[in-house]
Image 1: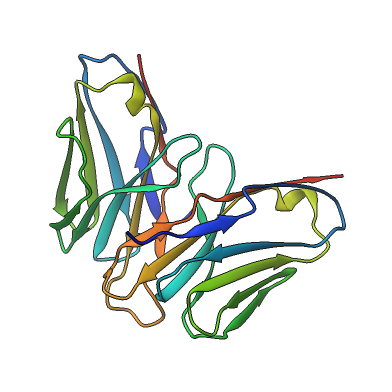
Image 2: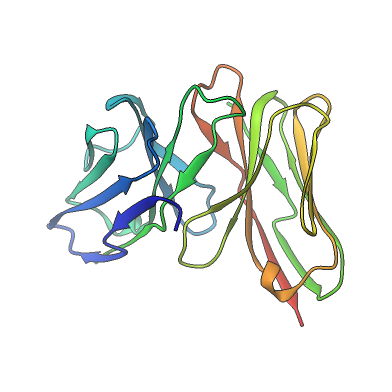
Length: 115
Length: 112
């Protein structure tokens, strides 16, 4: 239990569906992230939110739409995805400004399969 | 482009052997983290190093941060099957405020 909870853990969706991934952190952190992990590729940073404001959008296609209503919750809205979007989507959080480096804590991930 | 090179990519060893995983970059890190990830799970933090030359130990794992803060190593002594997993290094670069760059990972298999 890392203090970062992701739901659902597994999701299968068609290319015309609309679904959302949810993330909640109980660590009192002020930054939240979405990462994508595909086979044979390094972890790819998708979005960063500091204090609910989006500070990074790493050239992510518009079919991925993040939402951060407060510093504890983060969503990733998915629509008209492609099969190559199938991957493990990881949410993470950190405490920006703390001494000792920006250590981020990951959730267990949401396995997404697009059919 | 800031890149983090991790080596080796794969490592298959027998129980009891020692091993070292390396993480290198041409850029200077402000901090570096090591994570371990098991199949179907998110990465779990092992250690954060911040000071050049720093050495941290976690049971049989020894983490070293290079003096110039451009490289790091993870050494495992007397590896056990429970050490099997994907080891990831992640660096925070000067000026890359709260943006961690990950290496491709080292997939370790320890056989009984």
